[in-house]
Amino acid sequence: MCKLCEFVKSHVNFGFQNITWVGVLTALAIIPAVMFLPERYGFENGVIENIQLVVLFLGLFFALRPKVDKKFFTFVALVLGILLIREVNCGRTIFFPIPGEENAFYRWSEIKYGWLAHVIYGIYMAFVGLYFLVNKLFITLWQKLWSIKFPIWNFVLLLIGMIGGLYAEEMHLLVFEESAELLFYVALVGFVYLYSRHEDFIKKD
Picture 1: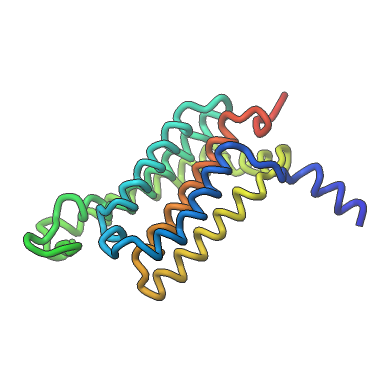
Picture 2 (picture 1 turned 90 degrees about the horizontal axis):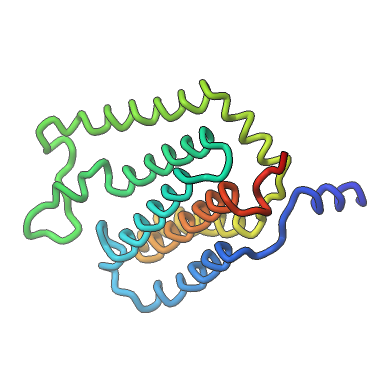
């Protein structure tokens, strides 16, 4: 039992950094959002989704200007790019709304050359995976997980956002779904921030 305690003590960070408090406040804001916000706030291109995009762009900024491991955080930036493209459905929800209808968009099958969108997106994802393997970034990831204390509360917030989002999607609760997804992104960007520039989470040589 003592060995387990020592392992947890040396590998888990139970502290609350400023970025973690942002996640906590986001989690707390979900309750009044679900209770009081109209459904349109959860629509595509709605207020909550736009905030998600801002959060992801902030994560992109952190990933492209790291203090350490530039190749690894270039990969992180590429992954955030995947999430950004996914949020706007490869641009479909920005460029192809159906006139006169709320929260309705043409399908790719109804758009000339629309089939190319998923092909290009798939090629991009394949490139990101190849970048990860060719640069052996799985080694860097493993080293980070074992050499630096893991921010447990950020992980808890990430799980809450993920589970809440899946539940809300199943129950067709738009505001809850988008709010939970926002929490997931805030927690994810928290990881990017901590591991790319926060002194307590940067490996010392």
